[in-house]
Image (cartoon, rainbow, N blue to C red; front, side, top):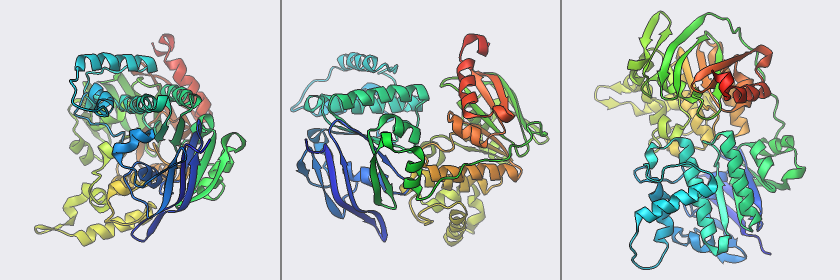
Amino acid sequence: MPPALSLEGVSKRFGGVHALADVDFEVAAGEVHGLLGENGSGKSTLIKILAGFHEPDEGSLQINGRPVSLPVPVSRFREYGLSFVHQDLALLPTLTVVENLRTGLIAGGNGVRFISWRAETRRAREIFARYGVSIDPRATVGDLRPVDRALLAIVRAIEEVRAEHDGLGILVLDEPTVFLPRAEVEHLFELVREIAASGSSVLLVSHDLEEIREVTDRVTVLRDGRVVGTSTTATTSEAQLVEMIIGRELLDFSVDKGDANAGDAARVEGLSGPGVDDVSLAVGVGEVVGLTGLAGSGFEAVPYLVFGAWPAGRGTLTIGDQTLNIAGMLPRRALREGIVLIPGDRQRDGAVLPLSVADNVTLPRLPQFWSGLRLQRGSMRRETDRLMDEYDVRPAGATNEYGSLSGGNQQKALLAKWLNAEPRLLLFHEPTQGVDVGARQQIFGTIRDSAANGASVLCASSDHEQLAAICDRVLVFGRGRIAGELTGADVTKDRITERCYRAATPAEAA
């Protein structure tokens, strides 16, 4: 059989930058194929070429042995059996779940037809039940949790593949697990294997090597816009994949753990709000404290409640010699007190994508760039260039659109934006979400450097390996409360995972 998808000699330049250079790439029929590479390696450009967003400078595409002109018209995706789940999920937040799920398939029919939304809602419930997903079809997408938005986009894409060509097609998943807890990741992988077993093909773009090794048959690695190699996943070690990705062996990241009994710099007492009930915790000067648990345990709510991004019912925050009412906290007050939040969804909550890198990075300190009635754009660009160099943001152009940066470089720019303010209390939620292995270690180092310079850090994450690498202590949540604490030699990936599952049982969480 011909490959399900075959790209030959694909190149793409943006100005003087070669995003892709003579790329040959193919996905076999019935295969789960992984696509790996550092942020900025060309993965997103390749996917956007397939999705018709970019037109290549050179190159050709075949689908099931059939030549297809580039760029692929969006109107012909279904004809070719292509379906995508992009990093931004491509959902319309003002529409309902059922409208997002079903409108594309309905619109694919010929002629004018009457739509019974009652019948479509019933059909949506049946679809979700088939996939073991619990989402209200009548809910507005903008009101859904990030995990439910991700599941909706994934189910929609799988349904589109199954609806065409007798269930055969090509499903492209671009970082599909970013917002998914581990249990849902396993569920997704079951669906991916089922799709491949039926004869369809899956192209999976991911930074998570563990996931890639678990579910793919083969993997292709891009570096600096070129194909480094394609190999069979089962016969390629994780160390070999890392070396292909970054061009060198990745050294273990280790830190000297701080003193867990250091004097309290920030203390939260009696915090209650969406997802948490009567939570009290403290973090010392120069200490990194992790917050974790299973999905829905409440750990991820703490940074947003403390910062005032989500409304708290009650609770106090003592920072320095001040005690603040968290129930009345607003982000602008938190910023005045030296508290910053790096949110998990950087694109939605952390930046303004159409603005330049300079506009985003200097936003918290905008008044200092005013002179009379004018913004000193030159000063903004020079300050941004300095920070881009310090935080290794690539490409390092202050005038580049923030949304054009890769995920890892967006995150590093976000860190530059807030850490330049020298905060007293740093609140993180999933700081390395959707970040490649090289940038991940840079971010680890940045967090520890901030602590070494006197900041106190609270890091909420479901990535237990990450917490083990950077945290002095880890607080494990169960049913909205702190169910346990790990310190010293117990701060390991396996111990954190074990404690999370124990905290989910009624006896442990009580």
